[in-house]
Length: 473
Image 1 (tube, one colour):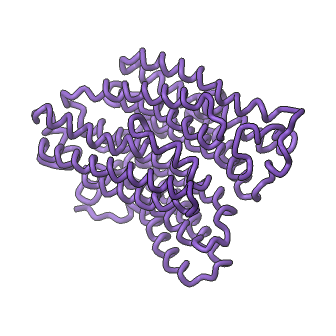
Image 2 (image 1 turned 180 degrees about the horizontal axis):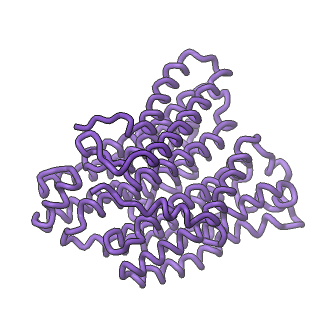
Image 3 (image 1 turned 30 degrees about the vertical axis):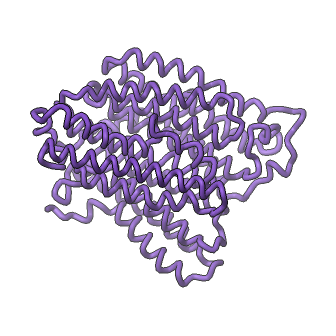
């Protein structure tokens, strides 16, 4: 079985910290539960170190009967998820400090992060479903953490959509097992080309439905704006970032490793989903006045661009590196914008940010970098990510999709500027109380995320080289 636990140190670090945090949190007094936050951050740091060491000392391999793959996608995915989890922890400190369920918050965050890491390395359909559950169930509880009416509604919608499409994913797993007589991706790769076309097509669509839900793409996007608006802001930052990393890398691995020889025209299906997702997300964001709902529809649009890499997963050699780099750039840029929203908890609408550049020039600069970064403005990482993903799409034969993506990118500038323009207003400024900061941790997280976004754009070639390695056969 090759039960090599050293290959799973990042995942085990998060799960171990979750167990220790759950037990310790039951005994620690409320004023001392910040210790669990330190433990969570230490687990993420340990995972980052272990990931770097593993990449430097070992080659691509599979463990536990080939169910989990340790390769380039796993390496980059771990780095992105763990770094993003650290940013989420940073922006959550003031939000949950001295909360009566503070330790439970950190435990849930660690568990759903471990589930996301498991999604990234899943090399077997059963492993994929187990990782889906581990990533999803704690996130439902996080969405309703505030226990007020909006949070309860967010948790309910998130749970119902997740349970429905999780069941569909399990049904798809059963169908693909019936078609390929196995659940390992390499077994499916050999068996599915000769399997009945209809069985493979329905099974694949059902499995993709669960991953589309994790990614927040059309047509499983309905939960995204309501959950983002109703959940606590750090949780909203989490659900619009980390599940997408797990879902999209898992989808890429499935398509690239298990279905390259299938007669099912899944590239066209994903190209259509990408086109619909980016267009709907950008158009729906046009006239939003709530900053959280605007970011929610923005993230739907961003998923549309990311799905382009999945559409050409077996058609272009640039698909993998463009997907992994774009995910890294998007994660830090999106989290930077959410960190500013977390730092200004009373500023809920675009008008509440009027005159922010005069009162809080640092936060205004972060918003400028992150919102223009999400458009794809150099020298941010998203600019290079979009350039790579558009090139991969053209290289894969979907020039029309790349042209539509360029048009959507230009259109998205409108609603980001609707938020940015009030920042520099000198008259009719929003009340000072509206822009009162929450504390220092969220601001520090915002500055760090913006710096990472620019750094990825400047040092992009080095990251693209890291993301260009092979997957396990």
